[in-house]
Length: 257
Image (cartoon, one colour):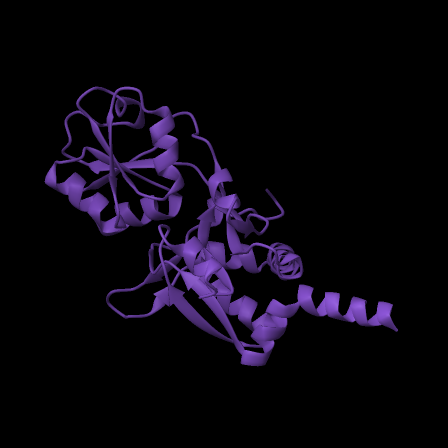
């Protein structure tokens, strides 16, 4: 009897996150509402759009609950997860060793390299390969994997870090920075929305960063359920469908890839 009680208590402890979600009837999802094609709040319509808005709704539907979005950004999302402000972060979170010390990652579902965004009129930075030279200022958003990548790889150019993503565009447009670093989703959106922007694509692919969902550490059964969702959307075509509808199919980790 003691053994049965122990097993029951252990199972309850391991699955307590999903049980609390079911009891509340709400899945709390941390998103960054400024992430083009991922979890973006459209300024014209006021509606959230992007692949992780679509997929988070699918996850909530699979769990049989409603959804509540919790705004965050890359600088604070791990705090939000640790302080139980959300059950899961779903906004294309790049997998890094530093972040893995504080959060647990799901299996990846997207993979992107890095791209530069510069002004079409910039006379110096006209390609990715021309970026790392003296006098050039490269802008990155603090807390992103691009920051560490550029800090480790730039040899001659100056690195500028900013807090808000919109500051990157401002710095480039003002001339204080020559180029800012983005991923595939953000880069594609920039050249579609802004006629001043040009996309600098490396001739040789940069390091690919895998994107995943993130949960609080120490919840193996909840992580297992999240991974099951990732497996399901890859197999049943939902990942490919929503990647295509958000123009992200080239970076989606579908079974064909």
